[in-house]
Image (tube, rainbow, N blue to C red; front, side):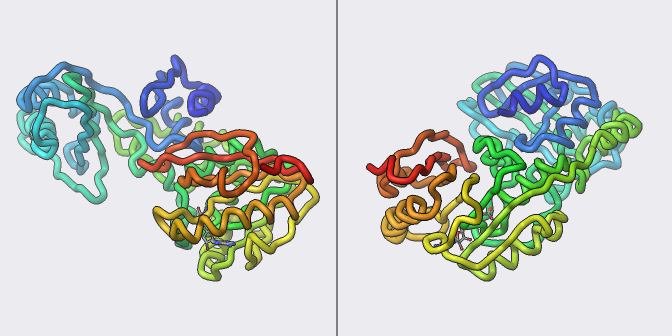
Length: 362
Ligand SMILES: C[S@@+](CC[C@H](N)C(=O)[O-])C[C@H]1O[C@@H](n2cnc3c(N)ncnc32)[C@H](O)[C@@H]1O
């Protein structure tokens, strides 16, 4: 899905690689992908690749980069190192050596070095060490892209915005169809669905790492920003939850995102609520043992959820996103699709159930 999304944003040589997608393009493509990608977490610019055996090799490879071309000495920086099967013993020491190399390069040329700010750096540098191969990237996103700037209300176990957007895309929901999240928590899925339908750029309310880089081109950034057009679809969005605190968070988030007028929120139990329309798309992210809800509670809940869907949601396509792989057995409905997804390190599934009265009963 990310390959498709990046292609639609004019990325070139787009290829799926483990853990991400690689692509090429000019700066406006970089700005556009940061501004518009609903499912990427970060856009990293590859600036060096090298073989290494020791921390000293990392130091030499990092020192060989012309950092002064990339950012000013006044900028603060942070280095992150991720490693897989690396021969190095300490990632902390590796991080330190790369940071030293960058600072020494500035000091050699300017007599001054940039400061480190781990909490809120201007410039983030990522090193990936895979076996004996190292790659350095400059982070063009800054804060991860799932931080869109609308989340002010905090409910339990919220989905990341980019995962929520990906789930909505996978459901195939179209803006003219009713969409219900009957366990809506802070309403992440509804906010992302509405943003997509209205053509709102996910990055419209935030800043980006590329704005702090020396090669930043404000004129082409302004051009990319102007590509945002507004659609005014007639949305039918519905959210409900049993927890009043979650509903308060949802209300706040919907207001921040400017979509409260399109969403009908109510306090109700998914096991009792009626379908808001004769047909539509339901998407739910029930609590799962890992974060909230014990495994025993959930084992009692799923069969009841299956009954509720069957009794009240005939004509609906229902999607359940969960890390609980017991769900299809316990819900006693036959999933028509199951898509593996990762929620951070947690393996999950998006199950699709097409509810037709009288059929699909196990
Ligand atoms: C994992 S959270 C959903 C998070 C949400 N997707 C978000 O991103 O903010 C699960 C939600 O289900 C709600 N819930 C639990 N049991 C419920 C029930 N029987 N009916 C409706 N909501 C329920 C909880 O209050 C909680 O807000």
